[in-house]
Length: 353
Image (cartoon, rainbow, N blue to C red; front, side, top):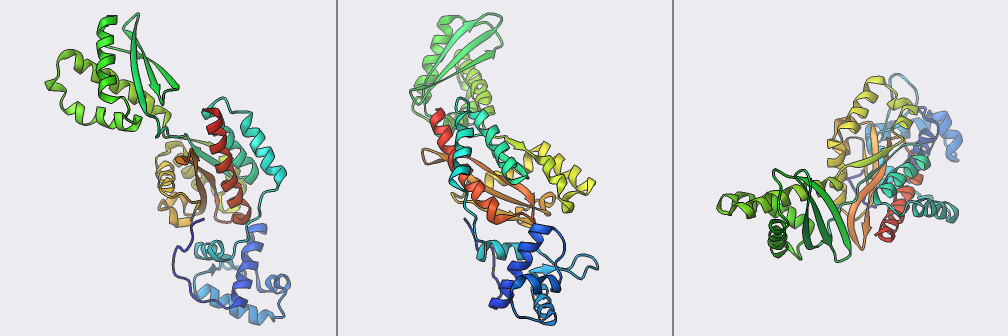
């Protein structure tokens, strides 16, 4: 788990303990916490006046704040970050919970997309927040062979052999009818040019450098590039995007229940762009990451926290999964759920190959 987002002032053991009690109480109850409540729950022999002084110091340092005119305090994003980085005690999932997760994923092992959808539903169900899982990227696919077969009505069946064992079929609509001999020459040309290269590398080459040199090719080779571009444009549709489940759960949290805020948040979920950018950032790291409030860089998520972890197949990061919820989330519970689900999804996807 990544930590150390910034410099923290030195806090006394008493201040740290009271901050932890305040965070725990606020996460559990959702109401500002007063000095009397802290006095009862802290287990410390401190007067309410002493506790008020400590809370005042924590507020001056930016760890807690006072909403409106309430006498109580709530954690700030900085307070949550300090809690997560230095005080969180993770609540490990039980063997029964892990086995149930594994069994539910294994029941969907026939389809990568079904696995991803199931994982997002599991994350939502376990946390009662929004579960999000990106569609796995086939970054390690290595092209072995391309074949084309003519069909009727200006259509062509494209057959891609990837990693020697995976076969992908695409039906393409083309500008004219091609003979079997023409398509054989196209197949030979593309296989010769790209065999052994990764799918991502082939796509980049086709849409980039080879497009710039189309004018110098003969008609058939130009057609070959045009057809290949269409194949890999469609193939890339299997990458990117995500499955989101349980977004309506966010309506149950008072701090997110404002109609205008919810509308903006749901619109962001629908557009996907900003959420995908955030998830792509998370793929850079091999570790679980936590974006609290404004740390995401997207104003629409200022009232939210996002706990995400990459998932891997054969030690290669192929996607990200996580939970989106209010900053007032049970991090001690959510973090292990995200971590375990990421590992189980990677294993299930490998078994499904």
